[in-house]
Length: 318
Image (cartoon, rainbow, N blue to C red; front, side, top):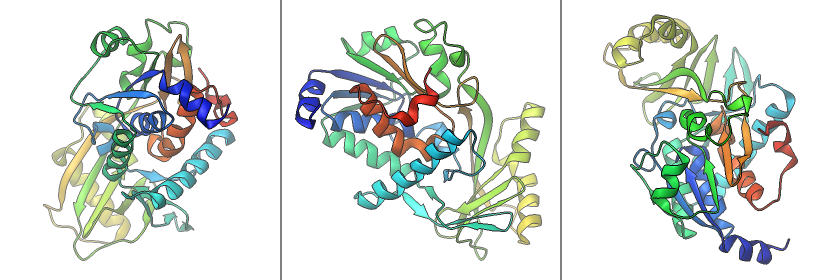
């Protein structure tokens, strides 16, 4: 199909994307750029979601299995580099990463707020509409709210499984869309700046602007889950402070932690991405590593809706 024919076909189609996180916003922008009339529904104020605020946002392909998933993440990193460099709102920060002393120069992190701003800007420029602070719990509610639509893309994170269950009851991988709780702490470090991502036995730290780092501890996350405690500055900072000081040899003031964001991480029941049509005109985009994959998946989802399936998605179909 030629690009003109594709746009003529898409121009007759109305698409709703449910979920304005990194994957949903990217998909909405790319679908609109291919000619569809797109409405993006966001339960939260546009440009920020709980999951995005709590993401460490490290763009990488380390230790990701199977190989098809690792390659998808590597391709996702490349698309971030390319698209960010070409955009008026750059979002990818190439810092390199150091994992237990081994350096990976191509890694970096996404400024998630900038990425979302860029996608929403692209969507609006392509004629799309954003309806923020508009939570929806069912596909029927989407149709009542928006009116007749030709396709619904559900990128609703942890709410995905419940939303599509009535139309896809026999898809085992959609029995759950809820992963583990996680947190991201933002810490004023003053005289202890770092210039790269560092991963040390489950402790991860990275730059986060002038004089600040972002930090995540897989050990502390696991401890909080076992105790049934929600992450906050009060519940996280004492142990995280000890962990950072022990790993990096720093001394941090008691009040250095300025913020802790918490969210439940979304993924399908088997932990792998789930991307594709689950019922007539209902497309699901559910994945872990959403930040790494978002720039690429937006393009591939938009192509999927036009019947131009990319073979890289074949292992991750419903």
